[in-house]
Image (cartoon, rainbow, N blue to C red; front, top):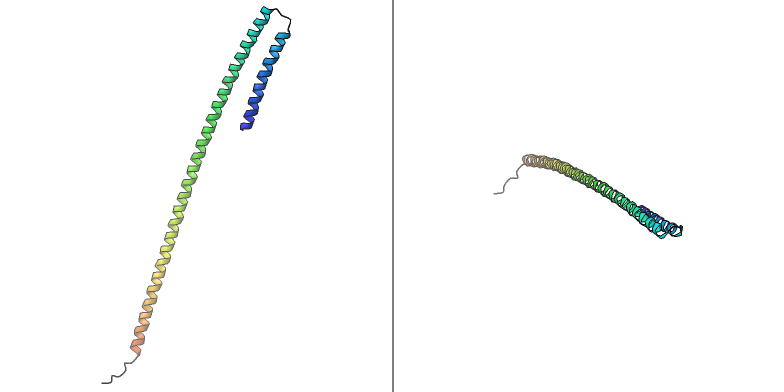
Length: 139
């Protein structure tokens, strides 16, 4: 975009300089009296100054419009980036909560299974001890 603007500015500057040079050459080569030539030169200089002021105002307006557009797009981009970041954080929290809940459920199941296995082992040990007859004591 900057290259295009630079080319436009170069073209505009070339047009102004070429026009001024052409007008000056035409005035100098035209068969007029000194007074008429000076009046024409003053008139052309004033006309050229007026057009220069018009172009300057146009360039200022376009530059201000461009700055406003870029600023607005930048603000929109910042807002969009903020929204995406907030969504990512929200998704990460949700995923972390789901993982934590899953781990808690797995830990509870493991504790229940371990507790049942311990009870079964204790019951089996008691049954085994009940079945085993005590050895007679040697007194």
